[in-house]
Image (cartoon, rainbow, N blue to C red; front, side):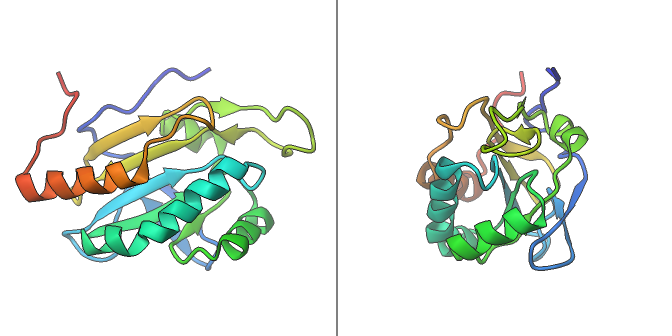
Length: 175
C-alpha cells in the first residue's frame, strides 16, 4: 500500500491521460489560459452510483466554476467504453479522462481498491480524490478518501476557491 501523499503547496505531478472526446489532458494544467485553475476530480468508475451523482453535481456547477476561472476535468481508471458510457449517461461536457494507471494513482497519493467481485468491475480502481490546482501548478486544496461515501461538498469547494482567489488566501496545511 502506498502511503505517500501529495502535500499542499507542492507542484502537482505531471499525469497525462486520454480523454473520451479524443486527445489527451494533462492533469494539473488548466487549458484555458495562464490565470485559470484546474479542478481534478478522480472518480472510482462507472460501477459507482455515488460517483455518477457526484459527476452530475459537478456538471450542474460547471458554469459557476468556469465563471471563477476554474477548468474541470474528471478521471478514472476505467477503459474507454465505460468512460464513454459515463459521459453519455451523465451528459457530461467537461473533459473526462480514462485509463488512469495504478502507478499514476500512486503518484497522486490516491487509495486504490480491488474489486469486490467481477460484477463490480474488472480491475483495481482509485478511490475518490479532488485537487484544486493553481495556475502555477501548486496544489491549493487536496481531498483524498478511502471510501466512496466521503467526498467534499462541491458547492463548498466552489465557494472556497472563490474566496481564495478574491482574498489571496494562502495555501493551508504547509507547516
